[in-house]
Length: 120
Image (cartoon, rainbow, N blue to C red):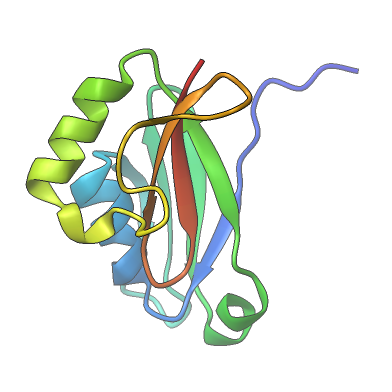
């Protein structure tokens, strides 16, 4: 059995909150757009990663995911986010920090989810 990609579904009360974090701040690109439909949805991608964003208030209240994005240059990612979107920095991990398990990490969050940026 072989898998080639993990594609998470993330549910928002307002999908534009997710777009601000992922497209504006983290520089993902919208590759499939159903934002102006009765059930707003889009696919965003960057560097071979893919995430499905949905607007669904009920599911958004049930699911509060957290996931990690791994990078090879955490300092430059941090500097870019901290200088352009500091409001997304997670208050509990707002600086690049060497964690006990050996990874450098910082985190961002919006109203729906948390994203840990990590470098091993």
